[in-house]
Amino acid sequence: MTWMSLKSFSEIYLTLFMMPKAKIKNLFLIFLVIFATILLFAFVDYLLHSMSEEYAVPPRYFPNKILYGTIYGFIIFLLVRKQSLFMKSLLFSMVVDVSLQTRYFLEGYPFGFVFLFLILHFLILLPVSWAFFKLIESRNLDSF
Image 1 (tube, one colour):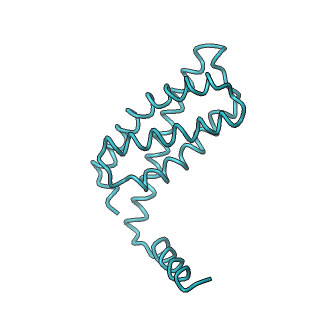
Image 2: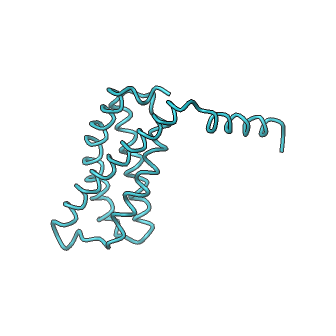
């Protein structure tokens, strides 16, 4: 280990564990908003998948979407939080959508199915994330 990596580690430690309580509260509230965003997204997606037997997915599909979507989404939000509202929503929607759909493609879903839902998921997630990110901005939660 070099001195630089020790310095970086100590900076990370101080950043994560010595944060003021208000910042930790904001991060937690942002996490909850991201979770709510993904929950609403998953509910609309559930309705879409229920429309036809051709679009049916196994029961593990939605819990996985909620779990991984929330984790990916929270990390992405932290990376793009300084962007404009539209750009934040666009980047969030694209990265979450592509991440989830790549995973489903690697699990063996047919390419046509994955591509169709890549587009549909993006069209669902963009307005949902925009609305929830507007809430975050109105509450000034991303100012940490």
